[in-house]
Image 1 (cartoon, rainbow over the protein chains, first blue to last red):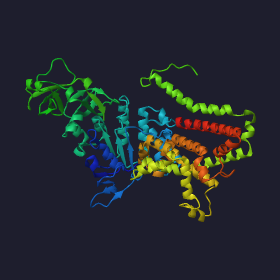
Image 2 (cartoon, chains in turn purple, yellow):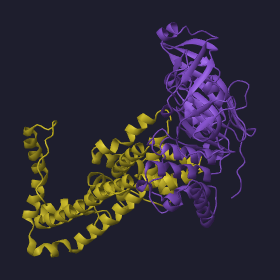
Image 3 (tube, chains in turn red, cyan):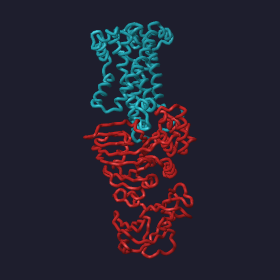
Image 4 (cartoon, each protein chain N blue to C red):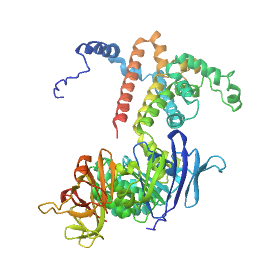
Amino acid sequence: MTATRAGALELEAQVADRGVDVALTVAPGETVALLGPNGAGKSTVLSLAAGLLRPDTGRVALDGRVLAASGPGAARAWVPPHDRHVALMAQDPLLFPHLTVRDNVAFAPRSRGAGRAEARDAAHHWLAEVGVAELADRRPAQLSGGQAQRVAVARALAAEPRLLLLDEPMAALDVAVTPALRQTLRRVLAGRSVLLVTHDALDALLLADTVVVVDGGRVVERGPAAEVLARPRSDFAARVAGLNLLRGTWRGDAVHTANGLAVHGRATGPAPADGDPAVAVFSPSAVSVFREPPGGSPRNALASVVTDVEPHGDRIRLRAGEVSADVTAQAAAELDLAPGARVTFTVKAGEVSVYRL
Amino acid sequence: MTARRARPEPGVPGWIHVPALVGAAFVLLPLVAVVSRVEWGSFLELVTSEASRDALVLSLQTSAASTVLCLLLGVPMAVVLARTELPGLGVLRSLVLLPLVLPPVVGGIALLYTFGRRGLLGETVEALGFQVAFSTVAVVLAQTFVALPFLVVSLEGALRTAGRRYEVVAASLGARPTTVFRRVTLPLVLPGLVSGAVLSFARALGEFGATITFAGSLQGVTRTLPLEIYLRRETDADAAVALSLVLVVVAVVVIGFARQGRTAL
């Protein structure tokens, strides 16, 4: 199987009737997560890249080849969807119901003109790659949701796209199968150019290199995934994300960060082995704040100095180094929490999810 | 069949069963009446007379030909109506469905003034060495004219129900529009296509008014089974009844096919 060349996407487009005016890029091999509220324009961006929608004005290019261009001063150009080398995978797997799993995955190679045997080999390769080779002879109706979505991933990869568009690939799945599929996606997306629409901050963190936040049809924030999710500047990112994300090394049963913090938690998805890079994820609202070291011996007691105090909805968000905590305004006043205050943050190990990176 | 307990249906008042039963009886009783009037002793002889056989064979042949014609013209029409957004398409859709509500005899007259000797296209057709009116070709055209909307309506509905999402995915996997149409769209709407074709065939088989107006009634050339039945009714009522039963049986078989087509997949 030849390695697919990962493409570079440049997209800059206005769509008036959807109130969308966006510009974004995907570098070769980069996974960009598009985060934003419903109706923010995320799907419009995917449609523009896939060729399902023409921009009123603007330009879409992949590896310098203009896929769409229109508007004053631009030479009009249009490449139809089938000729873009851009594969789309939706929330619903949309496997062709009249074809077997094998023929579904062989569909793209066949459409490219590959012979039967070659397409069949490609189908087996990609089915094995996502771990469902044994399902080749089934009909889509005989698959579970998670299996169907894996087959959809294999089918999209078999098209050897230069850009892969994923529209909330895990939103319709049972939470029980999400971690395993997320792990598979992490593996197969590595080194590919991907534009991923998601609602889930964890998907963005674990799958994407870069996060682009879209709100009201505009790009409001862009940056490295870990940074945007941990220190969101836009309102929306702050609402969905604003999670505590502590990266480090898994030793014993805790994530050890570079700053010497040790955070105990439960592994979600495949368990990391000692020495694996891992990330501990917990919500600021799960953090309790103490001025004096608390009694007993909580497993996660992180001593720190408050660096920031800011309102966050109806609560107050404290920041101390890498960790944020949400407290009520009353508690903030009683504890006299101001920048410079010495505090101890505690969080129950059960509130901390650990992911292997 | 095992007895099933009636499930309480909040939206079905008890009294509604009465008019529903009356309606069913209204449809079924005439069929019973036909069957009860059949002279079984001479039935075989009546339906296998030369004139009967000519009419039956002609009916089946022309209906099959017009079904093929309906498929060739109707599938593209349904796709354009269901999938494209050209201006004026709404008006065009209504006009295309006109033969559904038009009296067939009016359709026959319209066809006569289109393809007849003095018709709109008459001279063109004649220059090509054809004489359409009052030929078997005219029968096929008349049947196609009245049957085409059945196929278009049935298939357009199936296309709209299937939606375009699978087609979008197929295109993003690199399939050209023709490949998408052949490998995704058509297989997905196959049940609708089959039931549409069967309905068209049935409509063509029963066609009378447009045929007699545009094609006339020549034994073995344009006299299809409905025309034969109508003519015999005056002179040989028993034969008319026997042939009617043949058409009823064919219609029942056709409906069975259509139902199967709809429940397939």
